[in-house]
Image (cartoon, rainbow, N blue to C red; front, side):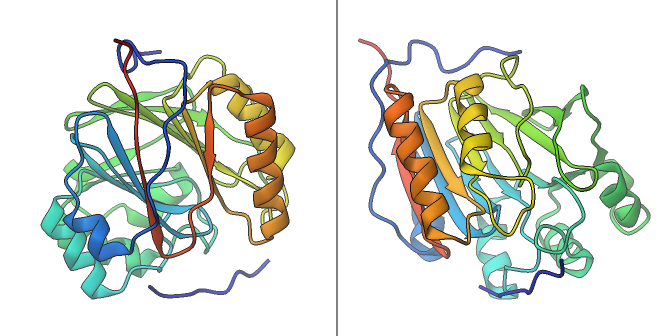
Length: 260
């Protein structure tokens, strides 16, 4: 893992039960890559800030990796088969051009991005693999369905809901609150706050109330107090939702339960 310095409506998993899943003990990227997700399993590897790798039985997705991944780690992910690389916006704790090109060239994944980021990628990645995202737009990336929502930040930002098989995964970048009730999700990856000037525990909790997920994965909180505050809000205010705060460079695994 590298470190960087920051300068500034579709159906879900049928028959899910009301009680919340319990995350497994954190593991590193080697364990993440060697695990075999079951049909209701979700694995989330936290690269730092809002950078995550998400795996289900149907797909592997990388979101906002900045330049966190070493070449050897990209090779490990290549071996899995990466279906999608997505960038919410162009800030350098989310997007670094050289790293994006390394990932795309190695994995041949589809890459979807906010238009400003897509403009930097145009002509440098195969046109057939580049998807230009826009708020209110739905796209397909192979077997994945993608829905995009305008976020709230100091510049343009797009949030995403990914449908991988029956599982819906939402990623909130480092956005402030925007209404999301039209985008229910099974898993919500939400930003707790700093160094984002717009994200906060309250904003993320309001997003979670709209999304009604089984699991909230807390990211983009450099302040442990903010992570803990969001976790507390979710546990106290959303009784059917589990909140989990994965360490940087670690993963969590959880199973989305079905009703009998």
